[in-house]
Amino acid sequence: MNDDQLLLASAYLDDDVDDAARARAEGDPDVMAEVARLRALRTALRDVEVPDPDRREPALGAALAAFADEPVART
Image (cartoon, rainbow, N blue to C red):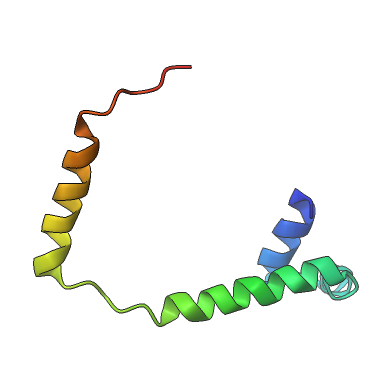
């Protein structure tokens, strides 16, 4: 799958395509498989519970502290 197909799948899922792009997406099995994957992911994410704020902040602080002493890779 190339970048154009990924972008088309995303636009299709968001119903942000014109008739020609919709036909192109629906005619490409790889694009439609990606649409199905993204749709399932969207559904799964919709069902994630909001974290408890009393637990969220300490968890984020601990995670950040764990990486505070990590060396930064320079390129």
